[in-house]
Each structure stands twice: as structure tokens, then as C-alpha cells.
Figure 1 (spheres, rainbow, N blue to C red):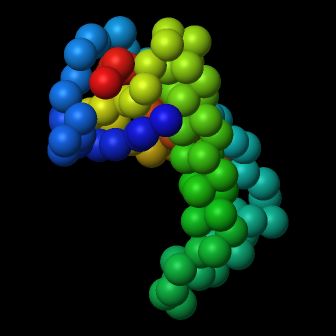
Figure 2: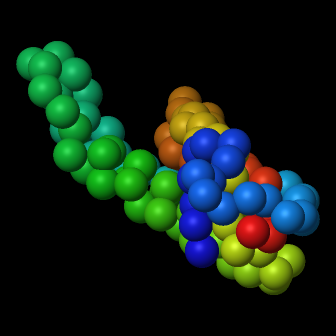
Amino acid sequence: MILTTTHAIEGKPIRQYLGIVTGEAILGTNVIRDFFAGIRDIVGGRSASYEKELRKGRDIALQEIEQEARRLGADAVVAIDLDYETVGQGGTMLMVTISGTAVKL
């Protein structure tokens, strides 16, 4: 399964558009991680724990669009768009949403 942010795949013409596919992942954060991320914000640097959670959310959402595309009989998903947001009271949860178009090559 080819997953790409581009609208076309070089050398592989799109024969059929099968529809929009989406994937979502919402991951909770915890007080300890928030505390250390807050310290990291003050002193500068990267928050490895948040980066790890974002990668995990992205991987889950990508797996979901791939599964949905396979159910439709797709060979690829093009024009993928990824969005990251915080949700919940006080932004205590990380949300990753991905959408794209399932296609037959």
C-alpha cells in the first residue's frame, strides 16, 4: 500500500478514485509527563515523551487509513493530510487526524 501526501504517484496513473479515508488517534497525557514537559519548556529543548506520543498517534492513524483503504480495494492513498491538536479539558489529550483519498492504480 502506497501512502503519500502527493496528489499523484509518478509512473502509476490513478485508474479509479474510491473515496476519502480517515484515521484518528486520541492519546491521553499524564501529570508526570506534563510536569516534565513544562520544565522542558522553561529551560528549552525537546520533550521526548510528547514526541514519542505524537509518533505513536501518527502511526495508529496511518494504520487506520491503510486498513480502510484495503477494505475499499485500494492500492494507494494519495493527498494525505495530517493534523495534530490538543483536546480535552486543559488540552490533556493529543489528537492526530489523517485523511486522504483511496485510489486504484
